[in-house]
Image 1 (cartoon, rainbow, N blue to C red):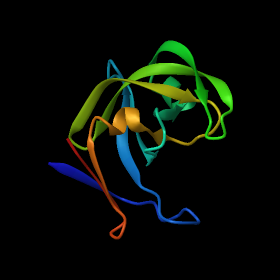
Image 2 (cartoon, rainbow, N blue to C red):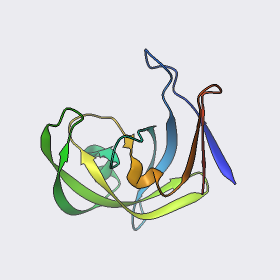
Image 3 (cartoon, rainbow, N blue to C red):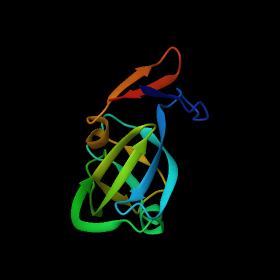
Image 4 (tube, rainbow, N blue to C red):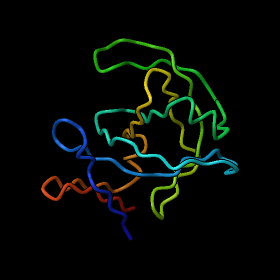
Length: 128
């Protein structure tokens, strides 16, 4: 089974591949449905810190990240459960994004799934 998402055409340029998913604390008591930009060039997934705090996600570590321009900055690492359609990814470690409200879905998540970008149809398909 697969789940399909339409690209986001509101961006003032080429439409962006996005996917909707549920992010929950590992105890699954609190969760939020969010939409994130699919970025195969990003090593890790970034979620706004406010969302992670709102769902009661557990902080497990601190590390350093780099921007696309090479700037190094400190980040907190949280562990969560992600649900994309019928697919559940438990114990995903991701980075708290204190710099923007953007959600970036990186290769740490994408590499656990089969992700197909259909540019002409402006659709993203996820299967496992």
